Amino acid sequence: MEITMIRNDERIKKAARAMFPHQVKWRRHLHQYPEISNQEFATTKFIREQLTRHKVSIIPARLKTGLAAMIKGKGRRTVAIRADIDALSVCEINKIPFKSRHEGIMHACGHDVHTAIALGTAAILNDWKNDLKGTVKIFFQPAEESPPGGAESMIKAGLLVNPKVDMIFALHVDPTLPVGEVSFRDGPTMASVTDFDIIVEGRGCHAARPHLGVDAIAVAAELIDSLQKVVSREVDPMATAVITFGTIRGGTARNVISDRVNLQGTARTLSQATRKALPSLIRRTAQGVARARGAKIQVNLLASYPVVENHAAANRILKKTAEDLIGSRAIKVTPQVMGGEDFAFFLQKVPGAMFRLGVKNSRIGADKGWHAPDFMVDEEAIFYGTAMMTAAVMNFLDGGD
Image 1 (cartoon, rainbow, N blue to C red):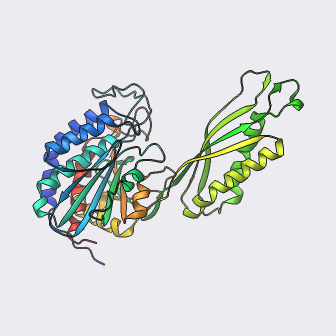
Image 2 (spheres, helix red, strand yellow):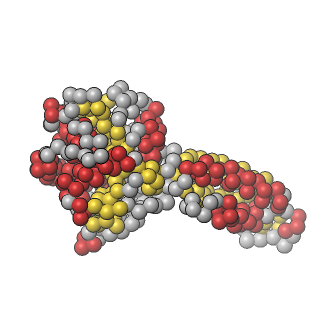
Image 3 (tube, rainbow, N blue to C red):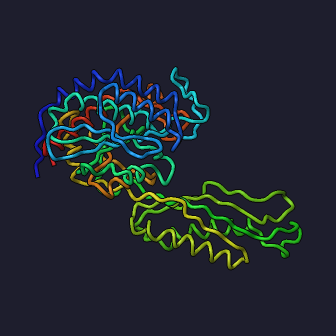
């Protein structure tokens, strides 16, 4: 089906360009004062202040951090925009005037950019609310970086209803994509995340008499190796999956058999079926290794994100919006990645899509990967992201689906 878009491209670009200097100031403030997941109190206050200054209505909701706003136009449709607001436990090494002032915390994934774009989009749309053919909700979501994430808390707070959201859009900065370009993918795009802890309990003894104890370190090593065989031998080869251990702690001295080891791991897959199977496979394997070696074991499943599956109908609107605003040459295909995103929870409830926004500019060092201590963005991307979001919202409300 051909999609007809409202011809407001130049008006939107002009408004986004006028908003850009304000957004740069917002982004730099947020970058200087980052806050980790579920601790975004000052960030939430700052967002609230900017929304109030631009007379954007805030939705009352029981949330520890984060907030939502609403712009009511004339019409039955409702569309939502989601931006995440938390930072990471990363020590910034960039030499910039607005470097993080919170030691060991950094916006190393671009959530400061996401927030500035959402704020600017909200301000523009609120100025144009008499022209809107429906309602717009803007979600400033906490805790994306820390499972179980903040998306479910917003859903449980009732933000997808009253009025019911018909479609939801989100973006994520991409340091592999040059500024001025965007990318899209239908279907599975980002992996599910299943985080887990494993505690191995053995029996300590002298290192020279291992037969009198149960070596928790040896059991942990065997367990790690066995869980790799879950991926290589018990998961469909066509269903990409990975199990990774990020920490292992155990032992007290070189000449003592350790009686306890703690492991922290994560499992990722792009298959919903594999996501459901992995927890039982992990638990069964861990218990089997422990029984074989006379150890005790605890498997604690901490949190899980679903697969991010973009809806084709939402991507049709976003792609056509991009073609009209920046041209077809600037449109690329988003690669599948094993990183996770709790935007997936919204997509299980509402049709929608997340697109990638190019922020790469090697001349200024904006080419480092997500979560790196020298992660950088070209702030010109804020203009493109704001124009895209503003136009996509209007196009959806005008019936472009």
